[in-house]
Image 1: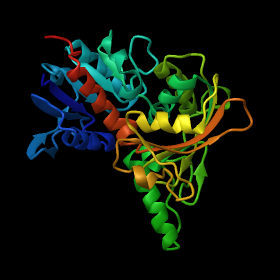
Image 2 (image 1 turned 135 degrees about the vertical axis):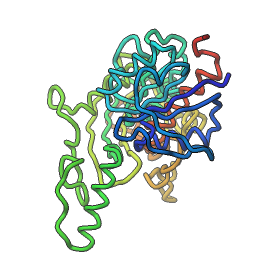
Image 3 (image 1 turned 120 degrees about the vertical axis):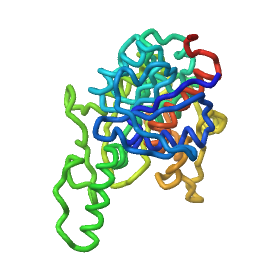
Length: 341
């Protein structure tokens, strides 16, 4: 089956990579259109050798569309994703609007692709970028020894704030290099160059940021196990692309370092890079432009009966957003799970 596709938010940072990923993965489609806000509507873009005019996001644009790949702010998604679903499309939504809705599957294909069997609202939620790479690494280990508790600290790239974040970081680095005053901060919570920001997200309950609550709640939903305890601390670092995570795991059953390595070596979507002596450890520079999740620094935690530490890195714009959304669409097409018209 070759569906009719609409890419919503097509001119944004994730939308641009979405177009790259569709091309690289040779996603099958019958026809395709590109939608964006009124500000970007009317612009031209080139996709696979053809020029397309960007259309405004409106209900009429979804008529006849079967797959919507959407990357918009949550407020826009709440308005238009249900309209697209009502028109008969399956919406794969990259915003935070629908992730915790019990009638909306929250999917990472390597972890819970079977959740796509039932899509009551016609909407599938793409998880938060930091959660996606975490659960890809957790799944094979959870299957092996059942995870009891996760303590995770993130080192998240500036591009998590989109193109404005990258522009701001680049301007700060340039100014500091030229010994000029740093421009006023707009995208991030403070100066990011030469700095680490543990408060670069909206405050949430109990002293946690919204990003930290996303990791707590989304991990449980994707893994299908509310008993997993998750204790996160998120921070923004002066890296352009690629989120890193220090992960401490406590298991219910014994698990050795070698067992963990072997499980991760065989896991879909994982690249094991775990030779500390040789300097082979995951780094953001390794993952940029890649769709896999890189895992290394696997070592025993001697402070608990069954514990391991690991280091997890992935491209937040690709696997953390665009690639995961396209992979969801691939599963729907390959398994024949799109609604029959």
